[in-house]
Amino acid sequence: MNRREHLVAMLAMAGALFPATKLRALEARMEETDSQYGLLGQMMARPGQRAELIAILSEGTGQMPGNISYLIGEDSANPDAIWIVELWDSKEAHAASIKLPAVQAAIAKGRPLIAGFGTRAEFRPVAKAGA
Image: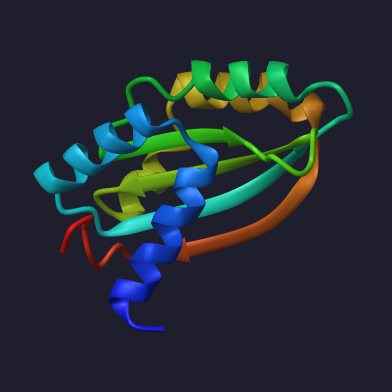
């Protein structure tokens, strides 16, 4: 798969998960920065706990140095699954974020609501929308 096909596939997936307004904001942020590290992951909440888990994960992600975007989306096929797409300045910035008190608190609070994990992929963003 070439770079353009890869980007189209990622944007199609993001388009299925996130509202158009969030996608436009993400595209604008990507134009302003040079993200070097990305993560895409699926997380399964315990049955009936997805909304609460999303709220907890959202609490701890407001101010993370080096974070370009942290998007959480509800899986449309699985009522207990969520997808998280993260763009970072560097892999080191992501690793450092795990040590932040707000992130540690969100992890501790959310852990009992997590039933498991699905697909996870690390990637290096190589093209921006419209490129």
